[in-house]
Length: 156
Image (cartoon, rainbow, N blue to C red; front, side):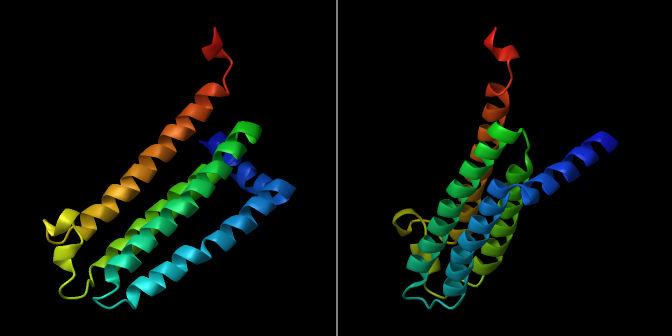
């Protein structure tokens, strides 16, 4: 238990101390401003442009996720540290909670139009969960793949 705690503390210190890690963290902090902007836009959206704001907020979460996972794969491949994957999982958890709370306040008249071809009412919760579970699964899959391919024993 103490060894894993020491490793995680060491990993978090090394990302701040290295030049590449600081650059990654600065880029991630700047990129996180766009999903925050899209959430604010979604919160203030009326019934006419709610669907467009909802789709742009999901798109912003996917875009930031792609860059975060790219940084995490690079960091895991070169440094053998999972800290950026943990930051990505935290981002996904926070994003899904915030978006699920915001879509509860869907404007009246929009509920019927969010699902595929307007067939299912209140599909926004399902769509949020579907997107974020997909992101979490792909993140875990990439983390396992990088772990697998950085080991020598699999090449025998």
